[in-house]
Image (cartoon, rainbow over all chains, first blue to last red; front, side, top):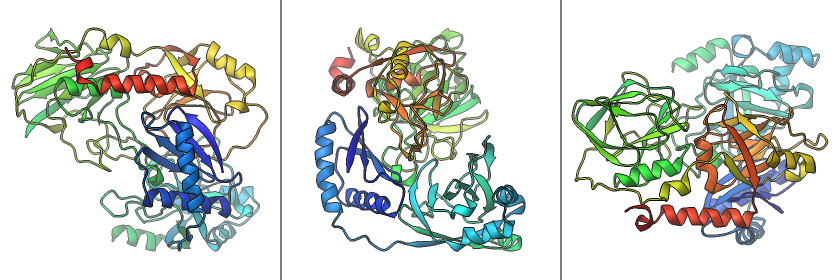
Length: 224
Length: 313
């Protein structure tokens, strides 16, 4: 555990130095404990791969006091049971108009597009954290064979439900937003709905699996 | 319920309050007023709660009709507002008679002007806030900037508004400056000493490509030492991150909640409202302060803003 002042009212708590299950588990445990036993001076918690960014009420505590309290929480969080991860299945129509970059990714990696899909659906992914936009979950780790860099020039508009890959990560865009990930398919599911509880389909700590569907199934699901 | 009719919306007008801080785990950034100090004072002058939803206008305001009348207070930048071609002074309550319209023009000084209304703007809350989050189209009025023809419910007047006035000197101490005070960022030591000196010694110009998500700065390029790969982490409000090309960006209220660019410094809490008042092409500088100094300044500003006696005559 390592602390770093991030701003005059924010503290970064590092719980690992490498992306992976070990750091992720510590992040989720500390987050869960902070949610179960909230601290009044914490204004926001932003989890990521290996860290939590804690924004605090600087009229109440300073960095040293925040650090001491969080150390105490972390020592208790370590002993908490991991809890069972939820499995979320996401149906995806791959390629074609829904996955405009599938062929490029395949060509870049010297694979057939079908093989890219096969490798994408083969794994169960860890939802490391949510960021970028409400409900946007960073999922990993993608098979090395289909890892692809971000687009040089991000798209101004990426359709909601688009499934993208960037490096060893994959994600589903919850909203129509700009985006630089390479798009290989699209889900008919609504990833984030403000009139639903929970609003986001995928939460930190979830396991996510993709399932291929046909264009007809995609359109039927959209109608429903 | 009384109404407000948008006859022209201006450049970018949204409903904002203090934002929805606390939902980082859902990937939701706080959003909220770019100049929270102006929003607070405008509301308090009307005896509203400090964080009552108001209209935030950007660089150029619109025209708003009040068919049922209202009491309003303008705060922040001066957009030359008028009623019947008579100028409306900022920072004091004004009664708008039924059927009158408030006409705003282009800014005369800063970037954002707030129109607070006694009783507030009535929009549905999303995650306990009325703030508009433009990227995801959530919150505020239908999740978007206002358009011509929108009709918004506003609070009905339930009491007479006192003619409240700010004490002399209050605004001087809170006037948005062009020198932003910063503390060291979490990756400050990724940068060579020259880069840190350039940050506090150089001049930067706010680029046209700046918005509520972030302010891109033109000026000296800052290069990080080596090419260490950073693991994405949470980004604080006001973080100054440096892209691989050396460009500096100040992350702002509608920021992405996480990011993978190194952060060389962070604007202090007491100066965040100044960031909200920066216009494209403004020249700015940075000055480094310690965490302890930044905290003392923040506490001092909070005390002032929480004290009715110190604020109002």
